[in-house]
Image (cartoon, rainbow, N blue to C red):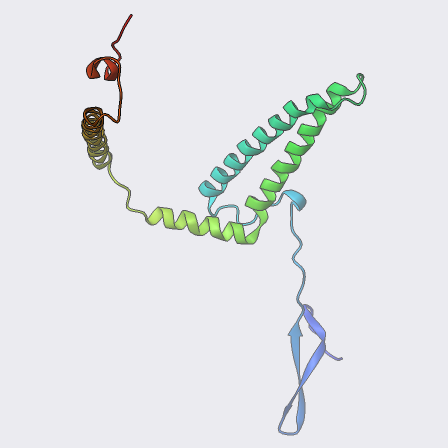
Length: 185
């Protein structure tokens, strides 16, 4: 095919226009080579807070899992000479594999990256309460919980007295001594 332009395919589509054939070149789809190989991060500037938070949380879980495996390796005994090496290396290899899996998930998986980027974008749109509003709401919650606890304690005592008076509850000592911890010494 004549006049192949660099960056275009040599295969050309023939397009008929008024009885004449016109060559229409198609661009070559080239594979993008990734710089950095195994440790290249996709979209490095996007969703960084959520991605780092997820990576640290998952890393802490991986570390706890490796520690659990290390503790469970006490039961494995191949030879006394290699026990410490095996007991140490198995959890380390599992930890490294888990950390690389976390990196691939958080740093390279396109769907996860899009989700985390969108999550961070939405978190920036949130109208966060001021410190004064949070403190006021906290006071309301604490007072409400204490009031409900007091009311439920009164209702509980009323039911104890009622069931004691009906004879359902049988108590050898006086009611107040039983309720408040007093009694025979």
